Structures are given as structure tokens and as C-alpha cells.
Image (tube, rainbow, N blue to C red; front, top):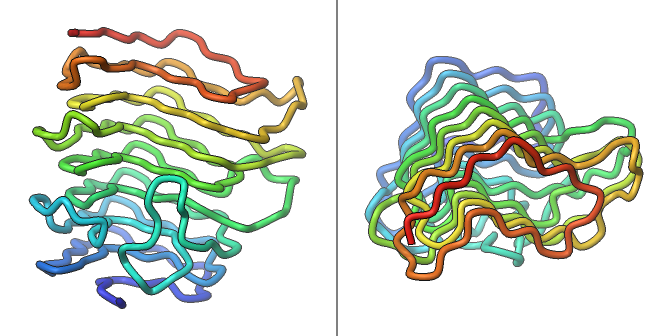
Length: 239
């Protein structure tokens, strides 16, 4: 509990730039925690570092789960969410953790397309998910280089589970590089996505490297996915 280096608690209109944010915890650790309805925050050109050898869910480089218990927020069990929006994670080096980044939000305004902007980051040495999302209504994940920790044949570069959206809110996973993904580069399960065909969800221009370690890997897996444009992706399989 409360094993964070930096927490934003009901905070807004803040910018962090060119700062090293490191957590040296050995039992639990979180680099950055967005909590309790924070919004309009930018983390740019920072180094965010947590344990890169543990396989415990108690380590996350960046988390948006609305609880102080660092092990909450795994897969489809998001551990509770708050009304986060306008969170910008841009051009950072993010290292270690069970997750590199975990996204969730209960914000309900439908007029804006994205609540989270995850752009141009290097995300490395995450154990299970490079980027994970559960019940996240909308996001832009673009221009990131995600290189998973070696040795886990069950890891995912990106994993989305659940989530409903409507109005102008969309999911966009584009122009990313995915490497060392044990099982899957992109697994996307969106149970109730918007059906507004004039504003489709997008999976485009991703490059999946042939560095899988599972004997039955998946490049891109779209599960319960609707109203989505998938185009110009390069997926190279090595199994």
C-alpha cells in the first residue's frame, strides 16, 4: 500500500519534464500513480524506473487504478477507477514493472475522443503487459516502442479488456513497435465499443517484430471487436 514515488491525488494542470522518477522498492513499487479524478497532467521526457526483475503484480511503472494497493489492477480486474482525463504520457523512457502502463477511467464525458494520450515512449522490461487497459473508455496509443522483458512466454505488448464508449470517444492504437512479446503483441477485447461508423476505432501502422517466445503466438487478436479499421500493420511471426 502507498508504495508510490509520485502520486497525483485529485490534481490538475501540472507538467513534469526531464525528471527521473525511480522506485527502488523490493516488495512493492509504483513509479507514477494517477489517482482520485486527476486531470490535465503531462509527463514528458522523464525516466520512470521500477523493479525490472520481479514477477509480482505489486510493481507498476505507471498506474491509473483508483486504489492505494499497488497490486490492484491486473488484466480485466481493474481494481476500481476514477474520473481521469487529459493524461499525457509523452516521450518518456519507462522501465520495469509487471505492467509498464495500466489505464482505466470512469470519466463519462463523450464529447472528447481521448482521455489518455500515450505517445512516443520507450517502454521496456515490463514482465506481463507493456501497456494494459481495463474499462478504459478511450485512448490514443501512438508512436511507442515497447520491448518486453525476456523470459516470459505469456507476455503481451498491449492488452485491452472490457470498456464501453459512445459519442466521440474512440480507441486508437497506431504506429507502435512491439518486440519480445511472449504470447501476443496486441490483444484487444472491447465488449461494448461505439458503433458510430463515422468515428471508427483504429489499429494501424503497427510493426510487430518476429521475436515471440510462445510456441503458439498471436500477432494481433481482436476479440468481440466492432467498428474498427485495421490497416497498414506489419506482423512478422517467428513460430
